[in-house]
Image (cartoon, rainbow, N blue to C red; front, top):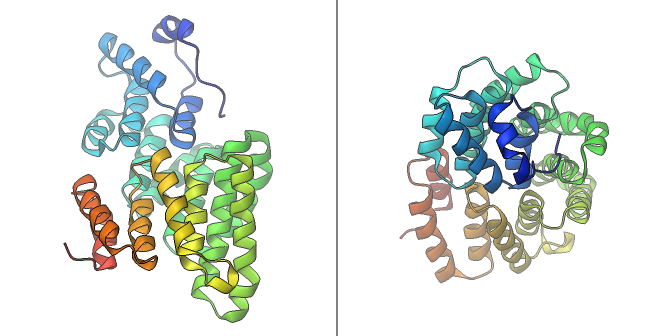
Length: 286
């Protein structure tokens, strides 16, 4: 599924053939590889402005660059009943914090293709964000055998899902929950980073662990700031990572930097309701 990007020498063939779009969607979403695919999409759309595969590719690349309004325009033009259209819409909902919408769209894609790893991962992730932690953990664990076949990048994303479910159960639970789930969450994040050291999702998860965990369990706000900053450099347009960077700066005593980050966040994610609510919950005034 997460095969290497198509070489430039094959672009002409891609423009005249029906490609398997699956790998390109996953390369954009999970691996942050979009420059060559964006070029391919642009070239295809010059020849066929309503090419559904190219529209899905371009929408995904636009999301990666934070151009959510433009991505939404492409999604509106996509026919409903294609695998890439459903997944692109699901990814848009995921990026913009519409977790119920993401669950519905990923669920639709999974019902159409039960073995689709992207859709199965998305269902588990949406469940996590909807605070259905036990369901998310079970879904992530069920994906592990498939993740071993998909390769290290996808496996890292699955490990982050499992760790996040455990970590949130620890954070919301009693002392026994913290002792049982906290170390297991950290171990999952550490394994994810061993598999893929530059994985933005894993960096962000480890950063959030350091933000939430008490010092007795290895929590360190300064380390949280460092990891969340690294995640931003890799994938700068997922608002939750930015929101936790603001929180971590406040916890680390970096009030001035937190305010600068918050102003940047306001401009970057203006109009995305879930992102605006996240910033409001932090309660940091201008």
